[in-house]
Amino acid sequence: MKKILALTFILSFSVIANTAITKKIRLKDIVSVKGVRDNPIVGYGLVVGLNGTGDGGGEITNTSLQRMFQKLGLNPKSELSSKNVAAVIVSAKLPPFARVGQKIDISISSIGDASSLAGGTLLVTPLKGGDGNVYAVANGPISIGGLKNGAKFATAGRIPSGGTVERELEINFDKKTALRLSLENPDFTTAARIERTINQELGGRYAIAKDATTVDLIIPSQYKRKVVQLMAIVENFTVHTDQSAKIVINERTGTIVAGGDITLKPVAISHGDLTIEIKDEQGQGTPVSTQFLEQKTTLNDLVKSLNALGAKPEDLISIFQTLKKNGALIGEIELL
Image (cartoon, rainbow, N blue to C red; front, top):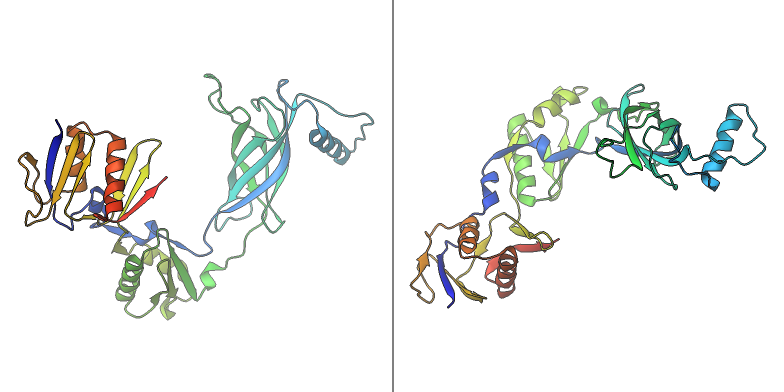
């Protein structure tokens, strides 16, 4: 016998995540400033001091060893081969406004046949940016982590504060006459609200929303050469953020995340042992005599009710997809 569930919905009900929509969010949490970002830097280096877990030779490692010895004033005649040395790629992120002498964290990854970098020390390695310039130098003992329990990724490690900034990126932030704010999650409504909030708070038309992602901010005359102070004020302005009606589904893990104003039209659907009927406020639709929910039902209530009837994540996913295909679910479904 099929389990029948009658659900009475208001056609503009809110979703679980909608509680976040009514809360004001600081601009610093939802926008970034153009030019203020991390920059990846990378280099090639050698790790020495390994206990027989290195590459054991190879063209790249041998050539690098020979060049290193030549720089040290040595000129080995025979081919060098050692399992105590490993060739690695060294990477890091150059933070915004990084200054010469500032310390940064370093990541190390083996590119040869080394079985472990545990106990090794990275030799001095220059790190270059996309423009080919050297921005930092890295060296030091490598931390693998989890050695007592057996490290799962012993061919990769880190050197906390193992890099030193040697070159600065010229931004001249305090001399800017305009800034570009970029929304992390593009949305026309949110962009318009940001423009309105900034203009109201600063008392003039200084912000202009260019599109769903971009809000341009002209520096007011009283904040010339005081851009840091201005951003300290602006980034703490709060706005009501909006988001598109979307359900994100990960079928591999059975995870369902819903956000935005999901709406449902009156519809009836049969799925396995379940027959689901969704009514509007007027109760239009085929009447049934079983479990009813309150009219102001949320998607959370629907999921709870289906779970109470034994519905599995794959059942919920199938139901949502069918509702979308039928046109009864007003919102976007994204599959991961």
